[in-house]
Image 1 (tube, rainbow, N blue to C red):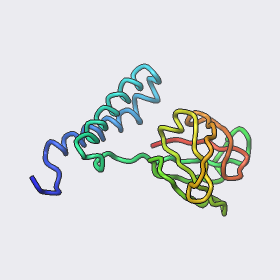
Image 2: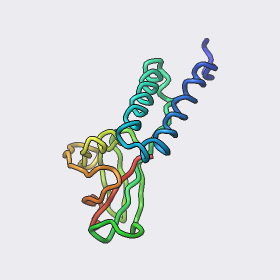
Image 3: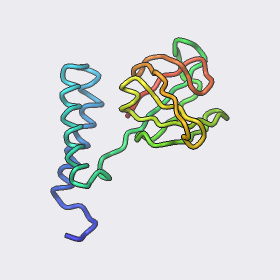
Length: 151
């Protein structure tokens, strides 16, 4: 008690969360789609909720949102540019190809079909629809098309 070092039980729960996330994202989701993937995702989210409730949310691994920008409308071939953001949904500024973008973007909001694109310092935001992960859609960075993934 009073120590900033995590105890064995906290480390065990963290290990379970990390292992579950890796299994879900690398094996079950691509192979099983909604059948097994959604059940394992529910389990991982439950573990994350336990860590958050216990005041240990800093132990939850952060996901990264990766955007791939293309010069063609079908997202064929190698992307012209790839860039990333840390998941979280807080106000973020990013410079992409000389263009400064502000927004509140998270893996959860993207998976729900939207992103918040904002004015400077997120003073005001607009909800824009996005395509599902891995599909080709509109680019916010001035390219012909783009896709996104969370990992």
